[in-house]
Amino acid sequence: MKKRFVATSVLMSTVLLLGTTSAFAATTSTGNSKATITFTTNTAPVIVDPETPDPTKPYDPTGDGGNNPTGNTGPLTLDYAPNFNFGSHESRATNSAVYQALDKKPFLQVTDRRAIRSKWDVKVKLGKFTNSQTSDDSLAGAKLSIKNGIVKSAIVLTGIQAPTTQDVVLEAGATDGTSILSSVAGTFSTWLVYWPGDLVGQDPNTRISLDVPINTQVEGTHTATLEWVLSDVVN
Image 1 (cartoon, rainbow, N blue to C red):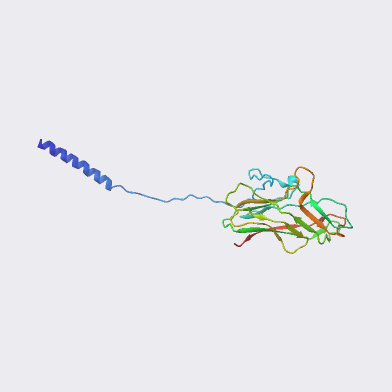
Image 2 (cartoon, rainbow, N blue to C red; image 1 turned 135 degrees about the vertical axis):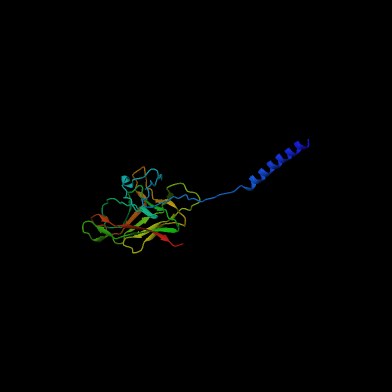
């Protein structure tokens, strides 16, 4: 009986000793690695339909009689600026007249893809009109009025304050531009200001008008350049 007891005790002691040695031998080993992705701004942003913006369905504004996209690339871009067509009219030699644009879907598009998302601002100015028949400056004192448009984003955004726009009146040949679309800091994505006309009927666009003074309405096609400038604004 005494020998069996001793053998059992030795076996139990051995098991306990091995278990204790295994616990003290546990170790950890670590290492670091990286996940990397790069974004570039080498391609011009997609132009979207101002009526129903959808970046998966690029919009060709020239198909609706609009201007060509700018093709600008980079982190902050003015993507599209509208033409304004006021049609053909009989000259009024006795009084000033206001003419409304025929454009149905004029809009302005800006895309912000910057790493540092400061404020930005778009200013516009109207150059001098030139008469196609004489190549001389014309329509002195003419004023282009653009009423407050509708600001839209190309995608649904939450928690981001939209840019703001306002009524502007541009005098032909003015030296300085007038702010027409301004943002707060952080307006990442594509934004539009839209001045819709009557998309169904034949009525002119009451949001865009040209006031032409008396005695300047001489024969010929009169054309002026609109200069749109998008700039960073220091916060």
